[in-house]
Length: 70
Image 1 (cartoon, rainbow, N blue to C red):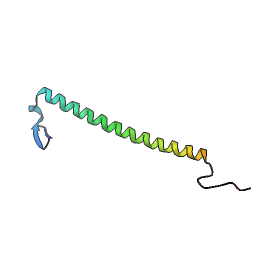
Image 2 (cartoon, helix red, strand yellow):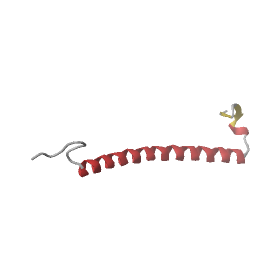
Image 3 (cartoon, helix red, strand yellow):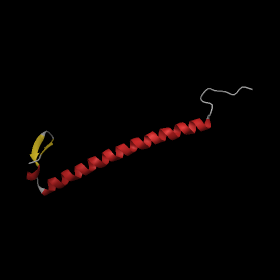
Image 4 (cartoon, helix red, strand yellow):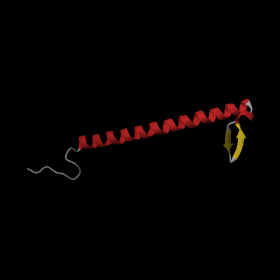
């Protein structure tokens, strides 16, 4: 049988009520969605930094502190 641990207490999965199994399934779904969204947020943050850097380079093509001398 499968044993699960919740709050440092072990339970036999098959002995759980249908309602408890449903709640456990919902928790597992929410945890996986949170992980997916956190990964997506990381990708978006990386893209945001790249776009920001590209914009800064476009606005200041010579780099910070560089000047044109004639």
